[in-house]
Length: 342
Image (tube, rainbow, N blue to C red; front, side, top):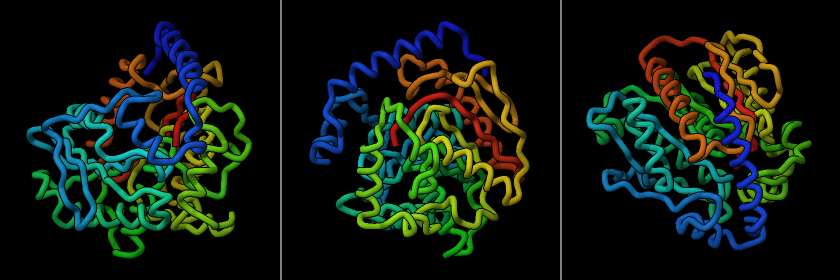
């Protein structure tokens, strides 16, 4: 997908507006966590107040709540795990996005309301995602009213937990091949810190202190070596027998190397992938095993980038649904140029 100059101008303008907004807000790590969580529900901050759709519903997955947004006749289920640094976020904060994904893909979206740190540090959140993944495969699809075609994915901390769930299904329960595809946005896969994370200085949406705070909430008292246990940092896991995966990350994201390194190891575990395709400037390049796309060179793509979101979601929908229904192939990685929240 090629982005025109008008959209790039919109993106740059949005970035500057975001910088002004962020400068007026207290740092999340400087206030009690419940204050930041409440502000998100009230729309105080960089995100608008959430929209709670009447058609959205809750199901109980063996003690873990799951938010369901489904089309009239779903073709399968997308298991979604939200981001927020294992500390913030909730499964009912993205109903509108889930409805859009359901429309574009034909899949029911099931989002995990996993326990958050610091009240519930590792392994609580990972345990909840594992529980929901098993429930979904065993009987969840029937409760949702969908056939047994599954994809899994998430953003940042959610992408991390999605990979952990896949690895646990394989290693603890002998389950492989149940999820036909994974969709991973700017995940954190080495919680000891990749070079892009350690060397990160150009803060926009997130800062180094914020990422440190989130990681310490999730892994209190653990040193770097302990944080690189494969169940905590899946970059160090054996990656055989995992589904085909779409990795998406911004080239200015502090977690850029996490996705690049993970995609390389995914390939080494048996996938084949094309070499990076670069556009004229480092701030507008994209990489995919199936196509080369130019993506906006800024921070998180929000309302002012709705056209890009729609096009990308349509591509995601076609790709993920096709992957759910067919045999394995190579794992694309698409790269935008934004700095993103965990």
